[in-house]
Length: 204
Image: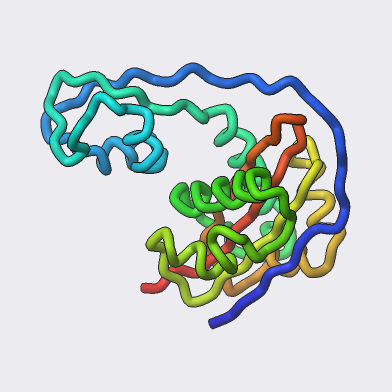
């Protein structure tokens, strides 16, 4: 198994006022399950369950019930911009684009949040272990994987500029062995942004 992981050494400390999107109210349709709803909205199953404490048994939902869906579209928009910039760099180098994997982005987002919660900046998580262990814990299988992390950059272009000016991070972004990518952004109470990129080639 190919294992690459390098972390960014440039830290930027700028501040902003966070804006949180309002949650979405979803009406359960015939044939729905919690998992189908999670996939439809590209949000974690646990996040939906946590937002709906009125549902005593998540395996039993009925048409017409109202569910609260956490709305992180603003965060996803920023993450997707990073993915676009990654694929632009790959195109310049004659490489195939990486497919966005929303489940991998969820894992990357949780890694960024974990760094905030546990006050660390490293690939090895006190909660999840190595990036490879973490990805597998969430049920994603791969033949090769890599991770980039960064802290403090405020925009997708800033963080991509930092990564592309670091040979190790650049090699992950331009890695020919990867076919899918997830990007996760989390912001601390002080407005410091933590970024995680995860790259994989999934097991067939």
